[in-house]
Image (cartoon, rainbow, N blue to C red; front, side, top):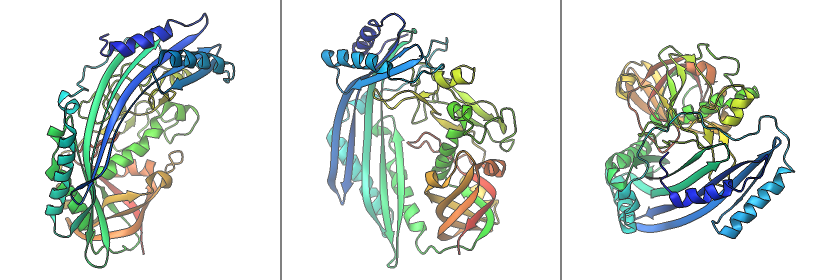
Length: 450
């Protein structure tokens, strides 16, 4: 495999070479940085540029695991981390499924993760484009003011080595801008937001981000509380992204092994409408969370979760795979060198339909366009599937967007919502999130208002 960060790879290799008999050793070495810019009323309000590096070591012996990490790559500190991880093994709980990932022959999909334009982009330019984004949002509508305009980027270099034969390294960087707007009509204030994502700042669509932020805020002016009823809802792409992200825990192999998933014991069953296909595909270069390797150094891959409405598979790390007597799907997750491997979806995408949001709305006589939800994580039970969350949006009357509404809840279950999907949009929006956005039309959902 091509080693892209030889300096870090050498450190990881040296750590693993010190394994004692009977030990499984994993070394994860990383360094990275981030820039955050916030502009308010044309002035720089907040600026952060930070860097960090460190090492995490995991040792497994006789079914017991010991971990340790340090926020430095100093040689003496690394030696201390290795010793501490060894000491911690004796305190670990014995687990028959404990073990490192082993090479499975799947080769990483070549992708572009590093952009030289972004790496070399001047700090002054980052501040200037953030100010430009704010100006465009203000110019989009006279009723709009901004709460903040923001620029964020980050870069990361990492290297893996294990006694089981995994050896890989790489680097990546990414960036996005966002703007939060406020709109007033004298009696109330509504908020809006917009994003733009690119490989480098040169790819940003500032006009689109500004326009969406202004539209979201002004659309809801004069909103009222709707009557309680069962109706058809259209999830805006941003809301769909959140909805799909909530579903991710149901595909988590560790959750499934513990019976904590709405899909447990349902492999091969029809869990959604026949035209619904959902994949987890971190090999898609358009996904914001695209990657070539997972949190254990195995190749990331395209996994079809639901095909034509039928549940196809769950996602696994090497640990959850051993629990369920199957193989890793390249879905180990990790929160940097200080984190232990977990499991989860990496970049979820719904197969798009053929209609725009406007065309979807044109087919609805009575419904609601859901533009924003609140309390989604607290209002959804991923084990039972119960779904209840606050929302705001627009009524749909005779195929057209009508009056704004707010202060209502939408209620159903995840299981039923997947079966009540009636249409999927083609308006794919690659947001800075783990799931793609597009419009989704769902029938027979309860909205509880006045």
